[in-house]
Length: 307
Image (cartoon, rainbow, N blue to C red; front, side, top):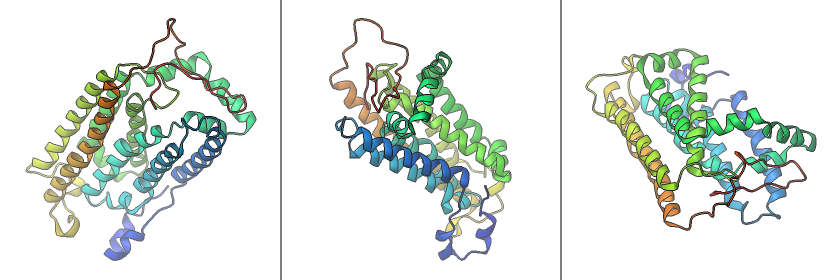
């Protein structure tokens, strides 16, 4: 994978919008996921139209589109020159794409979209005890929250941030960390079918408020700092003639306002869920995880489903 950041130095401003890059490690998985999801969704929708409506497919497609925009559009290259562009990219990977993908309830459609042999193999793997244990651990809200926050602050520390700007490899590692921890973080919030509820919805409201608070802290640091925090931007010229310090302040505002909006929308959804009818709990404890079977598109349900 290569970045066209250097090429922007010789591009006129009106041509920067055309500076898209083809990133095989991103484009190929995105296209594959889109094809598998569409195939599985088309097979499942007639059987469960209330579960797999057009909105599910639209949300998943939008999430994949956001990933492409974040990594393959000029935003990626501009992030090497302007902090505000890099903040937009981080928001797309952490708080926009992951919840959209989970809103698509992708587990069953992706599994159903596989060829029969691969479907049976993957379903059998997902049903094994080690994989079920790992899934349960990674999606546990405390683990997901800590992973999200650690990745957020670690990669915004000046040393690691500048390393990601200098090194193509670490730049991709940074993006992967943001996206994967974003998926973990938003999973217990969205509860994509057939996931089970680990915490009550009121508990998830606190979960989101604490996450927004720590993001707001970094936003305030960037917005009100009287010095350039990231040396890589210190010598450059900001967008439309802004100084590096003004570029940094605007980056903080971008993280603050649109980022808070994403958390606010999720909070409103949780409040509505908490005020609505609660799922009935079975008399006997259900299995630790729900397995989506590989038999001709049929799926198993579980308690506490939301999305």
